Image (cartoon, rainbow, N blue to C red; front, side, top):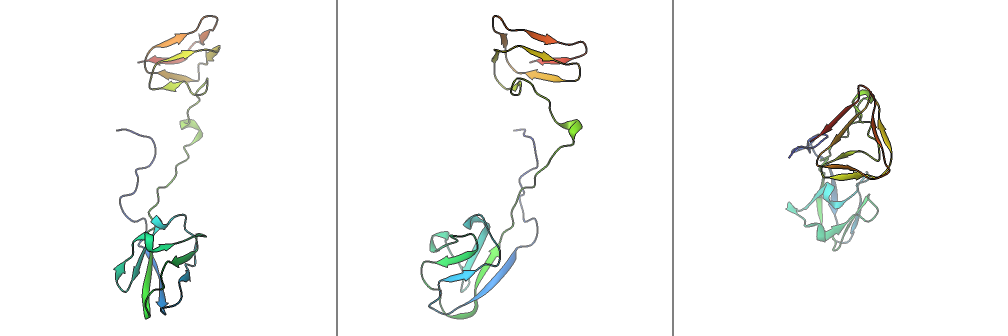
Length: 149
C-alpha cells in the first residue's frame, strides 16, 4: 500500500544506549537520566532476565519504578533505550499541496457545496464522481489542471 512520508525504521537508528543500576533488594525506584514517553521505548533486564513491562512503570517519564525490589547485585539491572523512531519530513514549499475546499483531494466520491475556483497555478484531484450541488460554481481558470479519476 502506498503512503506519504518516511518508511518506519526496521532497525535501531543508533546502537541502544544502556544504563546500569545496582539492586539492593530494597530500592524500587531508579532515575533513568533521561525522559521517555512510554515503557515501549525501553527494555529492562534484572539478573539477565528480560522483564515484562507489567513488572515496572515509568510514571513520570524518567523514574523506573519496579513493583517489587530487584535482587541485590552489582550492575545487575540493565535498562536499554531502544531509540526506535521515525523521522519527520517537511517538504520544500514547491512540493507542498495547495488544496482548496478543505483539501479537495479525496479517495471517494464527493459533492461540492461551496463555490470554488481552481487557479492556473493549482491542481485538484478527485477520485470518484464529483457533484457540483445546485447553486454552486466550479471555475477552472485558464491553464488550471483538474484530474477526475
